[in-house]
Image (cartoon, rainbow, N blue to C red; front, side, top):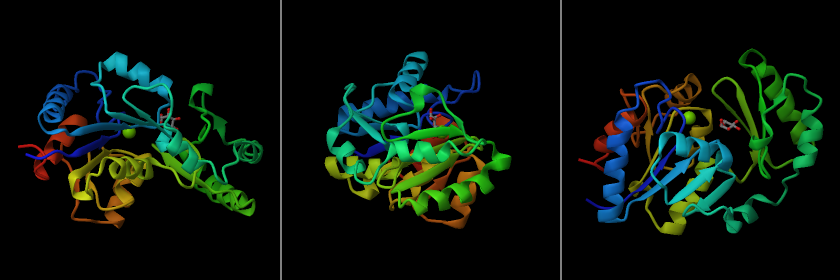
Length: 253
Ligand code: GLC
Ligand code: MG
């Protein structure tokens, strides 16, 4: 067995929020930790949550300590439980990012409801946007932001969450930053997810991908439109689906 880079979304991927449905996470966590000790495998969480909401989930679910945390939809990277985001990554995101200008434009859209303060981050502006209004609002907003030549990206997830982040960031680009830093080949890297903000993890390159069995329609639709033999659609939900995929790719036996 050789080491690999394990990168997983948390909500509804690594963590199953359905009561009594999260038994597989214990086994997955044990096996990953063992692999880390024996082979130097690295464990990374890639979440949309801010560090604050991440910590709440970590203590509530007693999550194993990752080697790095990608938080706020890929706009912040933390090593070894540090409180300070990696400055090299922040530097990559800064050019052309104008948070105030984005806020002044989005203020004109009554359909966009600001998410809680904790989820507004230096490189992330987040709203709730109802699915029924999403396609109209998103295309109009995209055009308007483009007029101002803003280097940004709109990420819509789970039929409700809209994140606006720098063009140079998302979970996929943050994952590749770590992969290159730690010198893992794409073939020795596996990414796992369930929803819209995870598409970037699967789309950025040819890292091995595991889509959990409970994935959201927006991710399944993207997967069907972009089939690839290095991506696996699991039967099982959440951690059970991850275990299934790790065995499929031969990372675990
Ligand atoms: C998490 C974050 C939220 C974000 C969503 C989708 O729920 O807390 O701010 O919009 O993920 O990326
Ligand atoms: Mg998720």
